[in-house]
Length: 45
Length: 505
Image 1 (tube, one colour):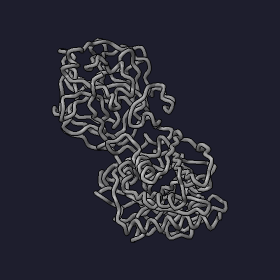
Image 2: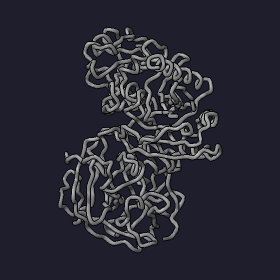
Image 3: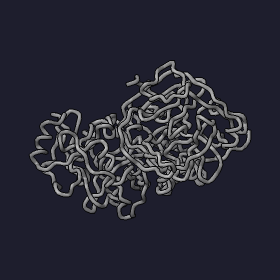
């Protein structure tokens, strides 16, 4: 078989865009998620 | 040691964040894999003398192929880091909708990392599978929205006493299903209330056994590039002490701009329609359990019958004969001979040139073996051609196209086609193949009757676009299938993930 050209392309139009966030926001997120784990621990450990 | 990847969705609010939900069967976008930090995780593995990483993931839900690679990038990064740290890598795949994971014997030198749902695990069964449980756990936290749960049991609580935002023209209330298997056509529902009286009325009328209501978290900080964004945090919960290790977080956007269209409401005057919800929610119906449909064409499509007449799909019946064509690539392979993988999956992908296809072109007829349909209200793409013809089409519809920068023809989904690409047309009078350049592709919302047709022996059918000109479509199934073997690709009628087709409406 001859070599076929790879033409695969990602979704272009109807797609979810991914955006990076700041370190400051990452830290806020991290603290919020830690609180979830803290509450799970308080209830189950 | 065992660990679970937790995906947490949040929104920014007043310089802080609010948690919307947590998931264990979470999805990591390929384009987000390099926004995560693998260092802390592997330092922890090395510090604990781990020599084997066993990674369990869900074949369908674990990642989204939103870049030009077919691979699961997050997993690739894990493999690379394992090599760097002299850790042996093992992987395990569980199918879509799996609720348990394979048994792997735990030892001191193994780390068993799970990115899949496990009904036997506490966090999964209690907190990711049941929003009543999760928000009750968090009811005293500043990190959840104002919430109303009143199922008559110990999970009930009410911190949603007043709506704080009546004036910014945005939704201010969200109604969520308690459990994950909800109908995305309806939920989460968003509303715009104008008084606390309406809030209190809603509290008394809502089905409290199944739904919770919350304040919709609105903050301009969640708008990026004119789209509403939700934060996704990826964390690993591990060990007997439930330690948490953050890998990072990123934002994911809705499909459409926040001002894509004006808000429309259901008959109650306060609940946003499904169309309007697309400005705020980034899930599509075709990825929701129970709503898959292998769309081929819609009620606006006129296909070429075997006698040269145009047939509306609503008039097409089993046993009818329609026109088809056939041609080969340089290897003598026709799109009809090609199995689903060969048709679209590189590097074996079926492709040809107009010259090659024209020199081998034959006309033939095909019989309709089945036809099914479903009324679909969805976002789709409005395609416009150089001759001014335009129509609305679903993103996964298969067309024979030619990319703008080559003379190669291949079958592709509309959602990967670019402006400037050319759509291949067949002239029913001259039997010539030619091209029409695609000059526009824009996201629209429309309601159509979608059709799935099975024809044999040919798989190609011809849809009218202009006088004597027809686009070439393939009736390959599973475009909307959630099974991993299809997903962005194709499969045949034996696809184990495809639901039973509906009857024709």
